Image (tube, rainbow, N blue to C red; front, side):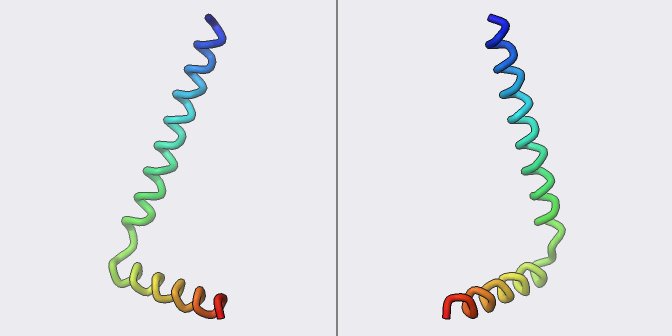
Length: 53
């Protein structure tokens, strides 16, 4: 039964760590203004166009 407790704690730690990563990424995305997002999308589109052709 002790093995299941260890597995459960490891799973809980993994879920908590994933939540922290998601929250950090969300804060970083939310820091962009709409103009910055639009500019980055245009840059990525131009780069993709250059690489595909």
